[in-house]
Amino acid sequence: MSLSTQRDSEIAVELAQTFVGMLNEQYPGWSRAFFRFSASDQRRGGQASFVREGRVDLFSAFASPESMNRMLRLGDELWVSQRSFKVLLLVVQGNLEYTIHFEAKDERRWAISKMDGGTGIPDEVT
Picture (tube, one colour):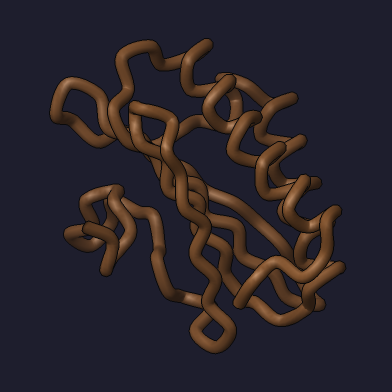
């Protein structure tokens, strides 16, 4: 999937900037981070994790509720515009390079969890 409008591209940049700002403020020294936004007509949600000093931690929405709410609003705005994805995965490197992946079919793809043997890093992301 590609971003089809100028506004969609602006949302993607703003999403990455918000995420990096939140990470720098709350978790200095992070080297890699993941934000997963899932959407359907019934519900929307997000999870995040980051790597710091070789350890993976899950992001707590309570640590920065304003930033997390902003990221959820941006994800929702992008979903409403596109309606062609079930999951968005933002991957940010410590050097501030980022990529955004979209999944159109599998709403469970790229789960961020440490339950049931999960590492906190989304599956299939290297």
